[in-house]
Image 1 (tube, helix red, strand yellow):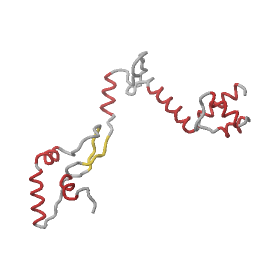
Image 2 (tube, rainbow, N blue to C red):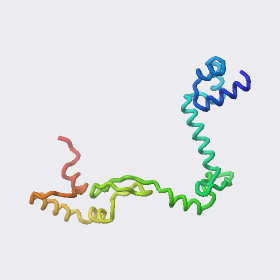
Image 3 (cartoon, rainbow, N blue to C red):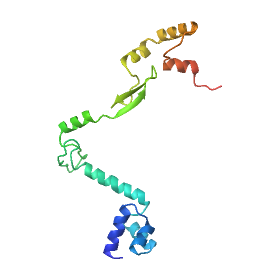
Image 4 (cartoon, helix red, strand yellow):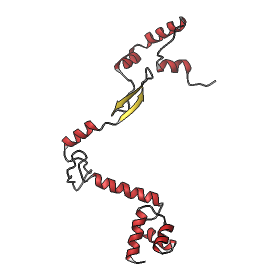
Length: 169
């Protein structure tokens, strides 16, 4: 195998092309291509190899330029790699790039959106206070409505679980 063929095999393998297709294009046997790839750490599924290479390149590029301003970052010899050139750029980036989560309120069951916090239980402070301190009053109000044959608009989650339960009959 010539040096040119070796380079071509390496390039094609990093693109995710299979042994048989490489062998057909270069004019070698599939086994010789596969043997070369095994000896040089290019074996395995072509798609996985291409994905690993892509991720590696993205990771290397991520730590070259500041995510906020685009300035070149000087990396330290040891420790975690930096993504920002200074703390000010990090603060600006964090303020402008919140991840949003779609959550469901534990009290009223209404869906709400949370920016940056994925463990919120309540959609608002009123739901928190009612769930925490007004359980007896809620239960009494709902029981009165049921006895008067009126529609119950909101049934708290804790009351639903109490009435329905987890057991199946």
